[in-house]
Image 1 (cartoon, one colour):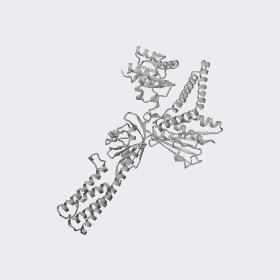
Image 2 (tube, helix red, strand yellow):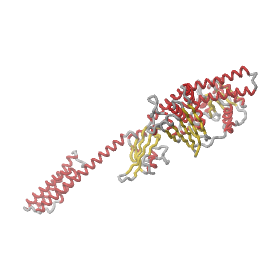
Image 3 (tube, rainbow, N blue to C red):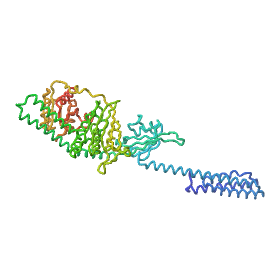
Image 4 (tube, rainbow, N blue to C red):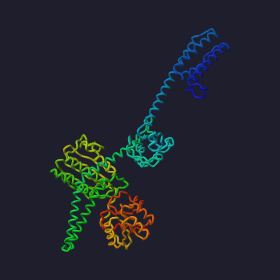
Length: 612
């Protein structure tokens, strides 16, 4: 293409004009030398100028220019010298041949450029219209290219980001760690795939699947890495909705059994209470104590039943919020809470299903009780489904090499080898259209989040064994006897706020029995007024109250005196970290139903740690 000033002409016309004047100049020069100076032109080297221009611009059509100039050369040579030799024709043939070669080379070069340009346009279009956000990073972590989707996904100006370090523009938790995709590709991996959370410049976090592959040069040398980020926000929402649906379905199946269990518990509590009321005078002290212990123990069992239901409806727990848990206790709890399904319902059909426990001595681990409870519930329900004629389930646990192992075996129908690899896939099911196919997929995700593994061994007609391994990431728990020790302190003044008279009375009596002075308030506003008028060493407030919630009241109390410990009384599961509790003004939580020793221990510990 002719570049520069073309005097208002199109490039095509400008090229023709330049070529015309160049040819005319060559003709004029030949005429001048031949007729004016009367000399023979030995070789017309200047003819190559228009020939080269014609070859570059018009490819093989340059032959016409060479042919025209050759005719002019022969004609002027003949007219000026009256002699035309064979050498003159040879020179003309060379001109025509050179023109053809230049035209051919230029044409091929132009086609190659067109192909390259088209390939670049196609690649650029594919790169920028890809469904996922893409970027190219060199081995020094410099961003070479960013597509429009990634620019939108990260709310980043791609022109400003180009040339900067990837960890400056797109920081993720994997940066500067061995898990960095570029580091792994440089280390020899051919494909890296993992789930990351992409944080936009506006603070919004977007869950993505990151896929990284090597970016190589023409000779196969590693230049860097190509990263592709696929937004999975919608998939996460759907998974969460399906998980909640599965939990509610399981909860519905458990509801009948829970009602049955509660009626049994209430019968025990009410029966013993009435016996004590009617026969208080004739019972000995040991018998009275025994019946009171039965009432207390039954009440605790009722509280555990409620907690199991609350755990079952919990949403996914972040690894940051994992707590110390006992895997054996979770196994027992899961077996107990699902007994209406595997025991009562099966027996009603005339079928017997037994569950054997072989639980070894295990250390505590960090994890989510509700999530692991869900895994075991899913396994039990699946086993019951596969043992329509009855059978046996064995749950065994052991600890070895800093890992906890759980082996879950049933004597059901087993799984054919052809589908064994698919059972952890979302939506895969062999139970028909009524099943969601998410139970084992969800369980797989939960175990993976605990940094563990779940494997399956089975063959059709020979039952199935699931092996779950979870790493131990917590030191052994404190000795239980030490936990039960109550630190004795001097008498303090405590404010108890609860809209339930029975709760106020019980808590007040427990604390008075522990040697403290107690003031009671039946509403949050009255409690706040009493706090403003008196000096209290500690405040206990209910979570759910009509005028003001426990969280709101705690914040107001902390504004008045930040050093006063505030305890939250609740029958709900408070799924939050200690740091978030502190932000809301709460120092500790007392869960209903109350344990005398725990109430006194928690209160005394808070009073001891109070800043004066």
